[in-house]
Image (cartoon, rainbow over all chains, first blue to last red; front, side, top):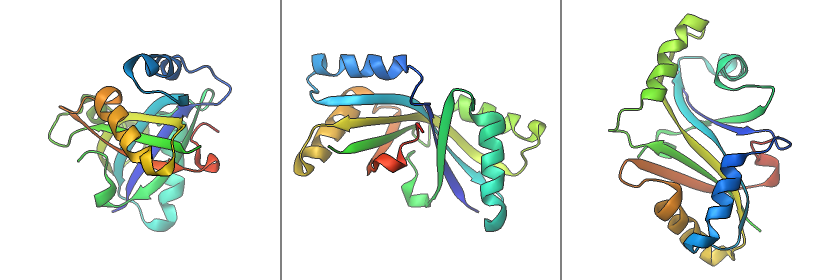
Amino acid sequence: MPRVAVDVLLKREILDPQGRAVEEALPGLGYEGVREVRVGKHLELVVDAADEELAARVDAMCQGFLTNPVIESYRWRVIEESERADV
Amino acid sequence: MPRVAVDVLLKREILDPQGRAVEEALPGLGYEGVREVRVGKHLELVVDAADEELAARVDAMCQGFLTNPVIESYRWRVIEESERADV
């Protein structure tokens, strides 16, 4: 069954205070030269769906529940077991 | 300059209450057949680094500031402008 990774960020025109805070903290911690920091949500989930219905199922879930489409945008992709972020 | 996407999740053996809450809410909202939901952080940032030093810079930042390596694991990848999640 496909394992899906969803990335959610505030839309580009929306101020991201968490991203701004990270960006401003980095130089003081010795990490120079980092900019355009945006912080959002990452989800991984397994969807019991055939390939041909997967996109519709994931998009419905993202738009209807996992994100706020007014202020957030998202991308999703199918990942392999070996690509899981939770090692 | 490389644009980097970082995905952070709680390690697999750590309980993820937010993922559990999402997983349990989905059927009631009409989204059936979803399991193993994990919820974490997604960051995108631009790093002013040459290719050969990028990995060391990103890993240092992830391990030293962006994640808690005791309970979280992460993956990162270079993304194109067109792959940004903040459309």
